[in-house]
Image (cartoon, rainbow, N blue to C red):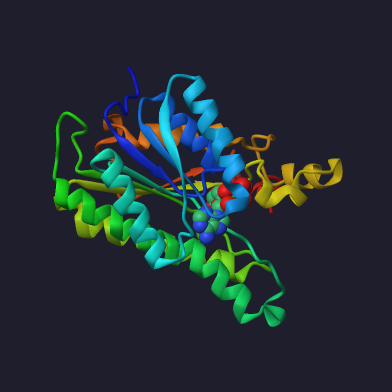
Length: 269
Ligand code: NAD
């Protein structure tokens, strides 16, 4: 059995670091042309390094700067990618941020920034992707499906998270966005799913793993007793995007080393 994404074009948002870079590399190794989206001039060097790893391994793609919370920039990104590669087959809505604060101290700017990237960004990219999927229709030389969207959500789409109300709210909403799109466009053979990572070792949660004490306390939440790596998510993204997953739509797949079994109840609660 082989996971193949040959002849397919994938946009991965926020792919210059962390989980997004792992996903970009996995999709490329399965044969997809990968668009490595990054948000700013500052992240260009990192995005280019991801592209170099991909091309050194025989894959192909391009970097593309776009702030996913900006409607104009997202529309332009899809237009430019389609003009360069004719179409888009796979969207991985990965870009995400945290702006943590105790709830009574959370500013509207902190709230809006997180909702803007984590939710509105996923809406804007999904909308442009679905427009393109519907325009192109099914092309069996590419995939049995008309198009695939993978939302990167979080265990916090179901686990409430004190001090992170904006983040948890954005991920809870992503679950409904994903399920609604899967329902609305299922008949068009567009598959929409979410991956919900637990603790993955990336810059977003450096404080949770960068000292032995922090890592020790994090591992108490993870029955499988290790922190996840970006390739743990990349492997699932490649499978979900492939025709091997053709009957999977409208679901959230948790990749969390068992975190959502609520380890703290393991001694009887
Ligand atoms: P990260 O900080 O390494 O990656 C986030 C990426 O999003 C960065 O490349 C950043 O440049 C990009 N980004 C931020 N704002 C953007 C914007 N406006 N437009 C385009 N790109 C933008 O962190 P990560 O852990 O790799 O996070 C990736 C996704 O995984 C996020 O959605 C995050 O919520 C989710 N997630 C991470 C974990 C974890 O433990 N690391 C757990 C659950 C969910």
